[in-house]
Structures are given as structure tokens and as C-alpha cells.
Image (tube, helix red, strand yellow):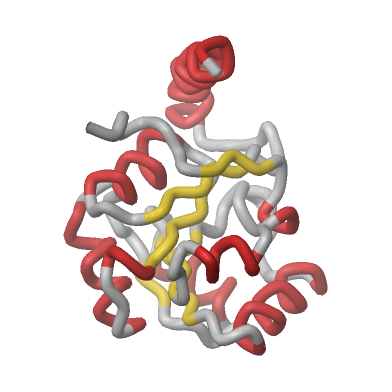
Length: 165
């Protein structure tokens, strides 16, 4: 049985994403987090790198849905230019939010990846649904106080995985 806190892939940045490998795994849909995955926690709008990434993924045939635990205002403001399907207040790792994202994209667990910066929300939620999980290093140290506390436990778990490989 797959460890629910172990990502399939770990990347330093979402910009290291190898789309050819994703396609080889049969992935054609991507659920992606915003804060500390695409931009730092305090960045309100997508920058040029995010815009280019979304454009490139779309041109390569990937469907994309934003899935965030943040507020409606935050997600809508960020998504204004991207105009992607998006879910706010997702309550990740709830399965419901991941199901909704796949429904919006018309995808199934077997062809969907989730990309995020947190083990206990993005990776756990994705693994519970049988998705291909990609953990990226957080872009910034600026985060909610609760997230900073959880990061300490995440670092211990990641170190254990690293030592066992």
C-alpha cells in the first residue's frame, strides 16, 4: 500500500515539471495549489512565469484546475487573468474538493495529477484519491502561523523518506 504522505515526485519548483513524463504516466489533467506553489503566499496576482506555465500546459493539452484552501476573494482575484476552473475553501485533504476539481476538468484519478507544497493537504488529499502526487518546495517562508507549525512535522517526514531512499 502506498504511503499516503509520500509524493510520487518531489520538485524544487513547479517550473521543473517534466510534462513528457506526466504524459508517459497517462496524466492529462492537473489540480494545482496557489499559495507557495505557484506564487508566494502574499502575491495577489499571477506573474509572467505563472502565466507562461499555464499557457504552455494548456498548449500541451493539459486541463488545469486551481484547488485552494484560501478564501473565495483570494482565489477569484488570483484567477481573474488565468480564467481556470477554480475551487476555493477546498478543505484539503477532503476527498470532496478533489472530486469536484476532477468533475470540472472531466478527468479521472488515473489521468490526474495534483501539485502542491504541503504534505498534509495536497499530497495526502491526492494520495487518498489515487492521484499522481507532486510535492514542490514552498516558494516562501511567509505563511499562516498554522502552516509554519505543520512544516516542522513535514520536514521530519521528508527527511525520513530521503534517508530511506
